[in-house]
Image (tube, rainbow, N blue to C red):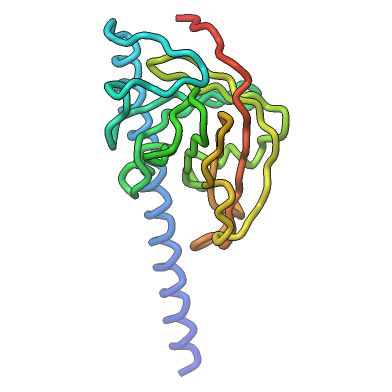
Amino acid sequence: MRARFKTLLSLLLIAGGGVLLFLGGRDFVESRVGQSEAAREFHGTIRAPAHRPGRPGRAAPPELRPHIGDTLAKLIIPRLDTELYVIEGDDRADLRRGPGHLPGTALPGADGNCIIAGHRDTHFRVLKDIKAGDDIVLETVRGKYLYRVLTTRIVSPTNRDSLNPTADAVLNLITCYPFYYVGNAPKRFIVQARLAGSVPRTS
């Protein structure tokens, strides 16, 4: 009886491991495919001649407000050699494609709180290595905007300070924490940065 129980337990553990491996592999593939599609969409939009540049601190004209599912921006962290494409929206489908800009929050380069959330086990795992003083560049059809990291912190899911509206142009990147955790991670990792200006396009 005991031998049969051990055999059954071993089979269940193997099956459980297989399921976790499958789910992890699926998430990885979906994130890569989603980013590839978002990159094509973004660069096609950037090359379109109809868009005009915007100055930091000004609100985007209504015709440039993104729609849910659009590729909103390219997020660059130079020190970490990272480029990610940001999707407008924060539902599951959007976050599988890339980090998601929370609808209704400030757009990159504009006054207010620009909030971008991402999964800790795919696109935003890189945030585990970010630190105060790092540069973050957000490139959109309106221009390239430079943010500088002020702080990183770990908070409980009930702490909503990073979601509050602001008068100044700030950026909050949000992901779950710990970065390496099986199941639903119990905390949140917040990167707060402040707009430092715009940077010229190189292409």
